[in-house]
Each structure stands twice: as structure tokens, then as C-alpha cells.
Length: 165
Image 1 (cartoon, rainbow, N blue to C red):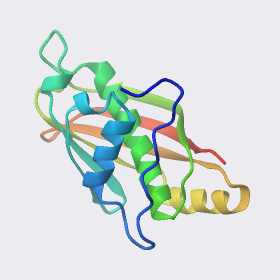
Image 2: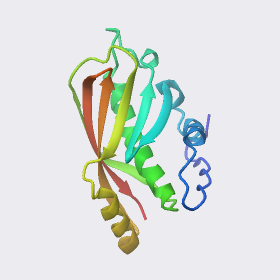
Image 3: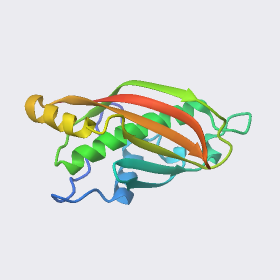
Image 4: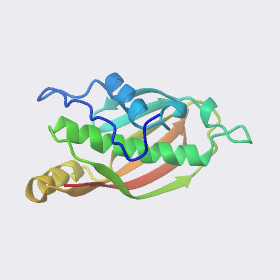
């Protein structure tokens, strides 16, 4: 377990023009944030501009035998943080990312293994963020997350993520 107040070492940036090895990124994430290993992330991959996680329900159960809202909310916030962090890394940038605002809407119980999709709320969001980073060294982007259990949309979420100078 890490010591409070001591930053975890950063992961080396990928080679120019290359994306991150998502398996290595996930291992780094699990070491950097002690809460991550118990979340049950089985896989992470990109589908165009959407980051997709596959997760196990078992470590996220509540007393009713369905998904615990607190775990699901944490996962939607974290996948957004990962989206921005990975995007920055693909741009050759190492900057801190924080969630500025997050909200969730629970639509149906999560009754089995599930997946979360995270993408920009606005297709122009990444370009606008790149422009703000170039001109001001900081910026924000809004992301949306959707959690599916099979074909059922169980949760929608939105987060504003700030990239610090």
C-alpha cells in the first residue's frame, strides 16, 4: 500500500504516434489507485473514440444481489479519468486530470457482468481541448458514460474533467 501524500510514479509515455498498451496501462492503474483491483475490470479497449471496459459483477454486488450504485458510480467516474489521461498521453502530454463534476442516472438493475462505454459528449470536444491546452496549458472536456448489462442500458453518466496546467 502506498503512503498517503506520496505520488505514484508516472507511466512512461508511449512512443510518438503510438497509443498506450492498455494491458500495461491497466496494471499501472491498479498499482497507482488501490481501489482499482477490486473493481473487477477484466478488459479495456478502444472502439474509435470510445473507451470500453468489461467488468465482473461479483466484486460489485450489494445486499440485493445486483450492482452496488457506489461501485458503478466510481467506475463511471474512473473510466472518464482514464479516457482523458489516455488521450493526453496519445498527444505526448503528461498533465494531471481531475473530475470537476459528475452525475449518474440509474435506469435498471445490473444483474450480471457488464460493460461501460465512455466517449466525448461533443464530437468536437477533443479538438477543443487540444486548442485550449495549446493556448492556455489547461482545459476541460465533457464525457458521457453508458453502462450496459447485455443489451440493457442500466446507467448513464456524465462528467466534466479538468486538465490542470
